[in-house]
Length: 594
Ligand code: ASP
Image 1 (cartoon, rainbow, N blue to C red):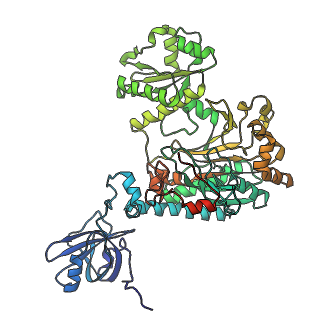
Image 2 (tube, protein in one colour):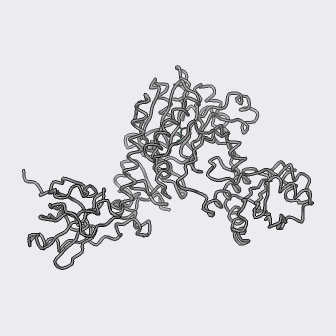
Image 3 (spheres, rainbow, N blue to C red):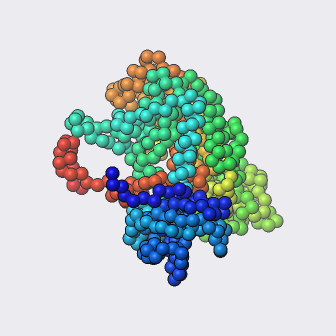
């Protein structure tokens, strides 16, 4: 058989050290750069493990020198040579003490001038990086990220297998599973007019695996959600998904704490203390204004309703009388870091993003005097009470938001607390503050439409004592749920599920899903529950986010090999694209022009 020529490699480009001097080696890779100094040609040869300096000199055969002279950036080559000690060493490079003196060179393929630089700090427009992802992936940090991601999934597979979980692939072409987003639909050619959905998560199938006796399931699962893309979302993403039978919350959380401990120890060298703290959702909201509190810094929220009842400031008084909230946060010790203009910007932001009506502020001056546009509305005694609530000291900046809708107050203050901590440089990337936020409300009410929806998903079990409230006051019903939060980001979540067909039917009813609709959409689940369903629960981690956080990257696109852009497009392959008329016809689809 005729074979393409290949210099079979003995080492990777990041391997060689001073102890290898004298060895004959064969390396393959890309030309990072070539320098021609007349009698000497240097080539930095790169692969995913690093760079080795290759040198061509007066001892190199003339035909090899000529080939070396023709090399350009990103040519792929093979080199044969001998390792020798470098005269001028490069302490920044792991291979910096040696170089390879070339005796032979093979050019596998030439390269046009690349449209992006192959270096980490290229500062190039992200769209260009995504268009030329095959080049972008050659950068050291992209290869590091992919390798790290692979370590995470390998560790997860090993851990779950050791703990008795069975890896099962659930189908990709399914009936919709509602997880709060739109489905991607796939037309069925052999069932005219009918559609599959791509799974938003394996939720229903993993529950059916429990009914099916699998007992402990896990999967590294692709999920699809057709959402309006926010900064850090992708239409397809990956979860580490699992489910367990005959368990309660304690069983699930303790297995996961062992997983997280191992993950942090083996991949970050960080010892996390387990059991992790558990914070009820209500406490997380009241103290931090967020269901994913960042615990790397203080700035806890305080409620002012009691201190201000009956005060002369109509805005606060009316809100309190209407059953709303007046709350604030003390950015203690940092008043001098924020100008009047900064506060105006904060005000604009919370008005626009969260629907807040405004932002009141109090600065505490040296000596204890207060500077605040709302001071005139309060008696001395009332102001003293406010300051006492915040334990105020000189150079404190107290920010106060009031609204009839407590959620607006929480969202605004929760945002400000973390945003200002960021501006003050208090978000230490080397600190990992993990916690469980537990017992979320079962339902939430859309502020605009007033409709109820499931806060996690409709298969979540209510706290049993709250079940009677399903009929009378569903918004008061709490759920058997838990989210894992790391440094203010939700890294995963799940819950104990309903395993009783009557309770599940009741849940659909509260959500305004008619019996008929429930039967049509989820009849198979309700039926399965009638044949002996084990109590069960589970959760899913967002793998992309987890890897991003562990690596300290700013965006999940840095840890996904081929991500979509903000418009859900793959700029490299130009997906999505128009389908051929014949393909559409086969699928029984007609399109309409907008
Ligand atoms: N299926 C849920 C989700 O994707 C996770 C779970 O409840 O296990 O968020």
